[in-house]
Length: 192
Image 1 (cartoon, rainbow, N blue to C red):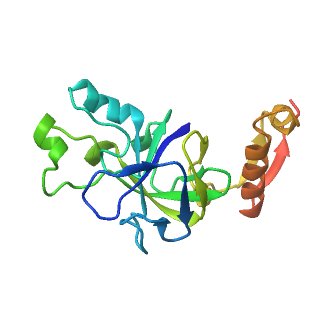
Image 2: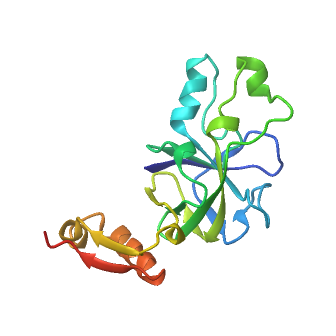
Image 3: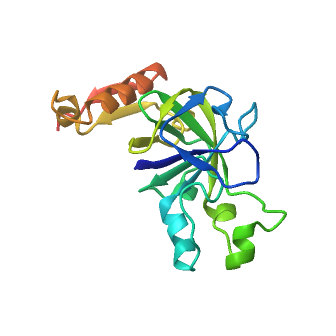
């Protein structure tokens, strides 16, 4: 799962411009974006695969055209349960707060194509922990949310691979390990 684009705008209801890197601010959103604030829709995400559906209808759209802050690739965003936590970049942690949205006034995309993917496939998150975010960064879902598990026990199946100094998974594995430990999980390597 990868971040394809980071986008901002200084007003609501307009396409967003792509930026080379952004800063997620805890309990606010993306610095410089009009949607930031102390509410449940601090950041919007839409998959590149969803944008492709609209391109297939003949529209000339790209990341940011749907006013999404983060364009992703490789995950079916609307299938993530509310409460799902995800790492976005090396530091940031977000939580899914809403799937889709009600579109009271049909947007320009809907008027052109007779459809729009955002009400069904866009998701919204709040920022639990801030940090830098940029295109090309991999992100990871830590779902379902920890409190939904009654036992809080986990076995790490690929411990040897993730623990290898040569593995590109090592920094992320340490992050996930510490996050689980900090949330009261009992972590044990798989010995099978």
